Image (cartoon, rainbow, N blue to C red; front, side, top):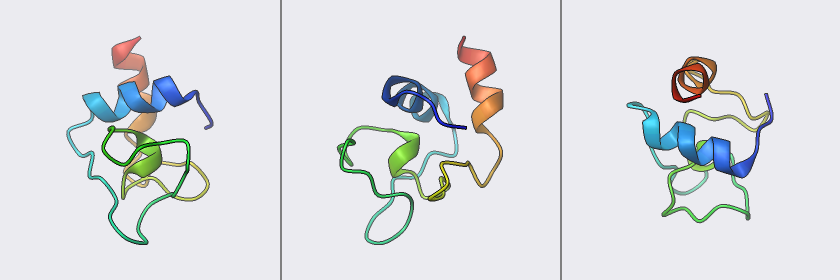
Length: 64
């Protein structure tokens, strides 16, 4: 599910499993600073913008 940059950041900040990607892991995206928590730079977020842990939708519902 594609979302806005702001939503990805809010979800990452609320996610207890957020793990910033280092090196070649996770989805690389030039729009996101690796120092800012975001799903787009999390090791659990794949290239298809999907959370491998299936936590994204649960967190979005909780923070909205």
